Structures are given as structure tokens and as C-alpha cells.
Amino acid sequence: MKITKISLTNFRSFKATQEIDLAPVTLLFGPNSVGKSSVLMALAYIQQILKKGHCNPQKLGALGDKKIGGFRSLVYGQDTSSAIKIRLGFDGKKTPFVSYDAGVDEMANHVVNAAYPLMNDFGGNIETGSIEFEVAWSNRHQWAYVKNLRVWINDDYVGSVSSSDDLKNSRIVELNTLHPLLVPYNNDDWLESTYGPPEEWEDQTLSEDELHTHFEEVLNGLNPNPISTIEPADTEGAGQEFTNRIAPIAIGCSSGSVPYLGIPVSTMLDGQDFDQAEEHMSFLVVQQVLSQGFVLPLDKLLEQLEKNVLIGPLRVVPDIDYVANPNPEQQDWVDGSAAWDLLHRDPSNSSQTKKLLSETSDWFANKNKLNTGYELVNHSLSEELGQKLLDVQAMPGIVDKRHLLFRELKFRINLTANQLGTGISQVLPLVVAANTDSVGMISVEQPELHIHPRLQTELADLFLETRGKHSYLIETHSEHLILRLLRRIRETADGDLPEGMTEVVPETVSIVYLEPSEEGVRAKRIRIDEDGEFKERWPQGFFTERREELM
Image (tube, rainbow, N blue to C red; front, top):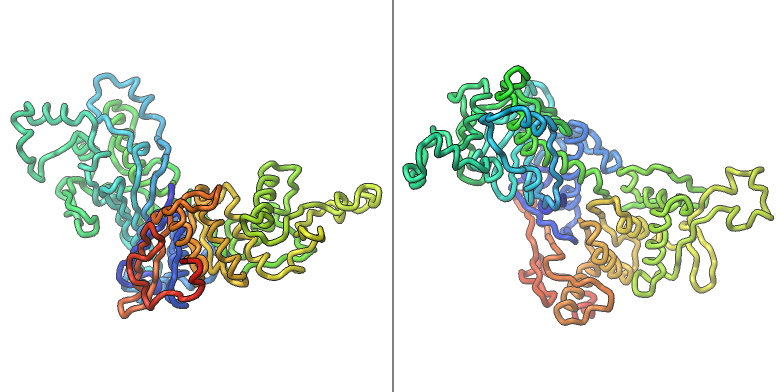
């Protein structure tokens, strides 16, 4: 899964709904304190909700336990009578089929001529989708909770889960049973058996109170809530016209409307006992479909969010006595320490560490890349001085300790990070993250800090050349980054791209300008043409320096 869009409503400085389209490389521009960091914070907030159930967090773990002050500080204008809405769009890629209940196929072998719906492979057919979290504040209980959860799959609305503010009544309140993945693949046979030959009904429109699919019939038959309790469809919230023909389905949730993750959806539907084989088979089918519709997207979203890393603007500069964490976590990326921890591992014990060290060193040393004039060296004192000069057994803690050094290419002098200019140490976490296979989206705040303009332009190539592994969400003020991106787009169109570089088309880059207004922050995407020129006028004018990048 890859996150492709972030939509924010009433979140921090965002009041009216604003959409941020994400590309392989996305740059957020705008004045200081306009809300660029809020976009990055929204992802960490959703991760905290899904992983820990915290809707009113004082700190965000993915941001290095950054203190945020809870829901009141997150909602626009600190108005707790308003609800936050965060909607994340995604590309499903190759979403694996997850059954959530292996009993379906097994049960089918023992049930003969059972009238259960034959459903499509919902999970295996997820291509795109989006999930919206509506987080509200309960004055009665003094806590925040997910009031509504909405799901869209393949551009069609699936349904919603709603919760009361006491968290005791969570229900699937809407289900678009005419969603292509919710219609049984043998539904025409059921329509014929229910309403007669096709010529009698195929040109007629079924009324709203009539059943349209076999899945509807089975689900309503298992639901203890009567059809009279069906709630009208919220077509405005769904963003499309549909008819809700399913009575509320009570389900087990956390944080309000978030179904328990990693397990089949827990419901109060009939048919859970084994003594009625046909009814139990129908229950298993319904449970599996509801799990794939409401649990699978959340499971995959959390899995992706936990792979993402945020690299903050102030990054650690280790000295010779730096003690590496052997097991760096997501939060350790915020100050860049995770990158140093990974490079301090013994490369002789891990092919992954050896590969990471080699690729990072190449980016620093290669004249066609960052060209810093340094390569990386990872060794211990025993390896450097040799066994003849040191008694390894006498001082194992000292001589076996790994050290990461920068070897100057001209004079072959080894230096520690704090013996170099600050810029080198600030770039290293970005390079390491870019070459770490296990990392997902990489978010960076102000990558240009303490970095020479030439190196800033080369960072743009780092992002472009590693976009196959990761996507990038960059909060920046750097004109040099954007000018190099525009240059690569133009060179691709003109056939002048340097040898060995991957082609860059306008869709590779999303440039979003955030500007304040009386209605909160407004987000405007500045589109790019094939000549590397902006299609729209840049708000407040455009950078006038470094025009040679555009020549």
C-alpha cells in the first residue's frame, strides 16, 4: 500500500477541507508556521489511533514522543465542539488476499446445496481506496473518540462505522451493498429465482425497499436488528448517491469506530453457532466480507504507517564515543540517530548492513552523486591497529566497539562526524533512509538546513533516484531542490538527461503551496508541464535566484 492523498478538515491550522496530492516526490512550501508540519503530524496521529487507541494523545510516538497537548491542541481553533476529519487515500498495489477466517472454505466442503452468497475476492481486488477518520470530543466523558469511520474502495463508497460517545455502541450504520465487490458473482441467478425470468425485471428498477442482492438478503436474515432501524444514507458524507438497505450491525471496536485490527470483525449477527450448518456458512461469508471491507484496509494502513519515518530539522552529530542503539525504532529517525545506529552495526555480520554502508558511502563519494569528498569507514580499533598491537582479550569492550568514520578521499584521513562541517552529518540520515529497504514513506522537515546550495540540488537527485523504494514528503523552503527537480523534468523531455539517471515526468513531482487565509490554511498544487515550467502562477511570486538551473 502507498498513501496517495491526505485530506484535512479542522486539523490544527486547516479549517475548510484541503487535499494534499502525494507523488513519488512531494514538496510542501509556504511561510513559516503555516501548517506544513501539520501534514506530517496527521499521519503520526492516525498511526497513534490505530496502534494505541489514543485519540487524545499528549505525545506522538512516531514523532519521537513530541508533545502536542492532546485533542484540544489538534482541533482547529481549539474548538472541541468541532470534529477533526482526516482522510487518507491509498494505492493498494498488490494487496494480498486475507481471509481473516479460514473456516469459510473448510465449511463449504461440508455444506451441500447451501444457499449462501458466492462473493468476489474483496481483499484481492482492492486497487485504490481511502479511509476517513472523524474524531470528536465528548464533553460528557471528557475524551476524544473516532465518531465515524468511512471506507471507499476502487472509487466507490463501501460504508461507515459509527460510535456513541460512551464507546459502548459501535455499529456498521451504512453499507453500499451495490458496491461491485459486495455483489455476489452469481447474483443474476438469485435475481431470477427471486423476481422471475430476466425479461420480466431486467428493464425495471427495483424499489428502495426491495432486496437487490443475495448478500442483502442473507445479511438482513442474520441481523437481529429489524429492517425498520435502517438509517438513511448520508450521501453527502459518502460523496455519492447510494441507498442504505442494511440495518445497523453491532461490532466490536476500539477508540470508538475503529474495528479491532488483525482479527475477523466481531459482530452480534446470528449464525455463529455450529449446530445450524447453512446459517453458520452464511455467517462465515458475511464475516469475511465485512472484515475485508472494514478491517483489511486499516490493517494495511497501519502496516504502512509503521514503516514510515520522519526526519526532523535538528539532527544529531555523534562523536567518537557515540554508543549505538542495536535496535533502532521508528521514533529514533526524528533526530537522525537511527541512521547512525544502522551504520554502526558490524557489516561482516550482516549482508544488509554491508549493502547499506556501501550504498551510503557511494552517495557521499561518487562524483556523479553528492560528491562530498568522503567515503564511509566502519571498523573497530582491533581492525584498524591489528591484533599485534592490542590484546583483544584484555580490552574487548574497547577494541571491539564499532566506529563510523569519514575517510577524506584525497589525503586518506579518517575523521569523526563532529570533526566535519555540520552539513555532512545533517545529510547522512537522509541518505541512509533513502537506501534502507525496510523504510516506507520518508518525511523530512527542512532537509536544506546547514547544507550548501550545491548539496541541496544533489539531494533532489537522491530523492528521484530512490523513489522506486520510497515516496518522499518534504517540508522545505529550498529553491535549489525545486529547481533541480524542474531541470530533470525538462532534461527528460529534451532527451538530455545525464546517463544512468531515471526519467522524470511531471507526475513524479507534486509541489504544494500552503498559504494562510481567514478560513484556515489553503493548499494549492502547482502543476508542472513537460518543459519543467509551472502551469499556474506561483503564489506570492517565485524564487528569483539560481536561474541557471532553468536555463
